[in-house]
Image (cartoon, rainbow, N blue to C red):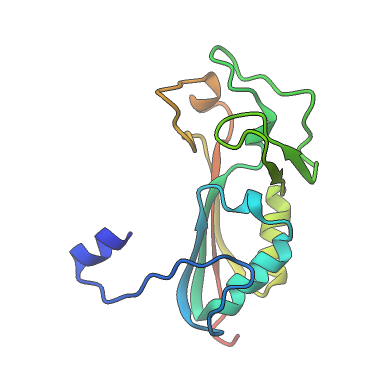
Length: 164
């Protein structure tokens, strides 16, 4: 994004910060972006959404591109996607046994919980989409799950109302 902004001559600043708890002023951002595996490290999805909303100026947008919450349910099987009997879509967390986070505790949020957290934080959902394209690409792995049969990612666009 930075390279593209420079190419277009857009005058903007990029700030990298951890949410929640970013030491930034309220209403300081036109866009807050979260993505590529950030939400699995959030033990409190509501606190994340509230802090993102706090940082946005009225009329600003939260942009999320993340692994689909259903993705941890199936295996990396090379022939057919298989649902793992040891995982639940509604579990709060699990210990990863797959690359790249082997051994790490990952927090799980359903798509509904993520969307509802942004709405509860005062943001308006503008767009939500689920994507079949691979979220992560590992050494050319072309599992059946990555061929359009199951969701691998989602994108969410929320806006902060002009009055708030």
